[in-house]
Image 1 (cartoon, rainbow, N blue to C red):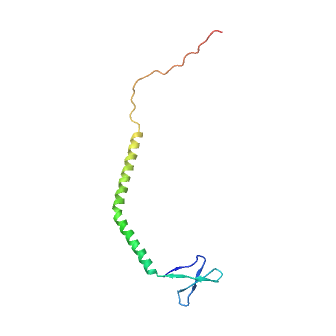
Image 2 (cartoon, rainbow, N blue to C red):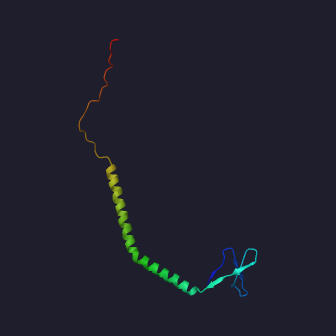
Image 3 (cartoon, rainbow, N blue to C red):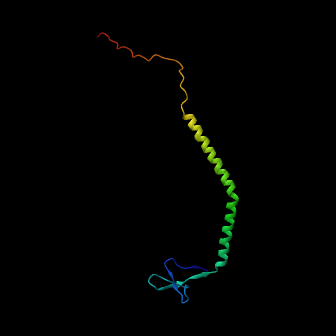
Length: 111
């Protein structure tokens, strides 16, 4: 059975051990309302069917997801190697030797 009752209420204890009555009481132990009872068989079957369908879909998709993750991992590894290769300095080569520039000597002029 599925039950529906206001959120600020609780069930009363039944005379049968471990059972509860459909009466909904508030925190001051005043009778608030009766709980609404639903047949839980259909709901349980829907939940079970949905779980089985999701499980089957996950089993079908698992190989595709795994290959996609492996592909993504290799792409990221290749990119990391390319950036490492690009950042690594190669051997330096002298193209031309140039004398360092000398600043011009101060110019004096007559005033």
